[in-house]
Image (tube, rainbow, N blue to C red; front, side, top):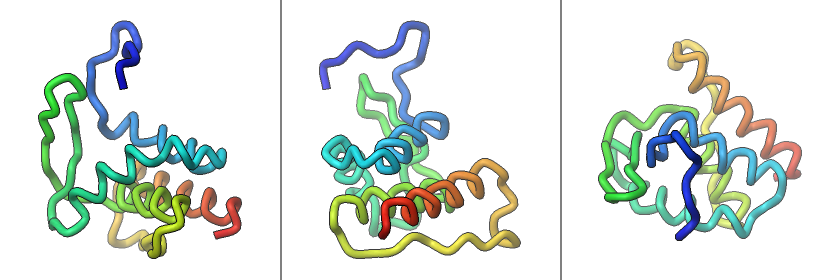
Length: 115
């Protein structure tokens, strides 16, 4: 985007930054979701998905697509009027606290948006 990154932060889009599109969608900032949705669409057909991206080199680390990231990607698609629904949160299949929390927050955001 040409914008400077935060001082002292590595140029990565990863588990901690995945909350940015969640909060943008929740706030109704749909125009700002397009880059995220386009990025995730590149990987939608794969078993593995992007878990870390270096924003300076475009290097992508692939890994297991967990429930939280999938839910936020689905929320972005829905916010932009694309078909689909959020994955259901299944606790026994998702022992990861952070992933489960992201999935639940995406569900709340979707409900708040009325979709």
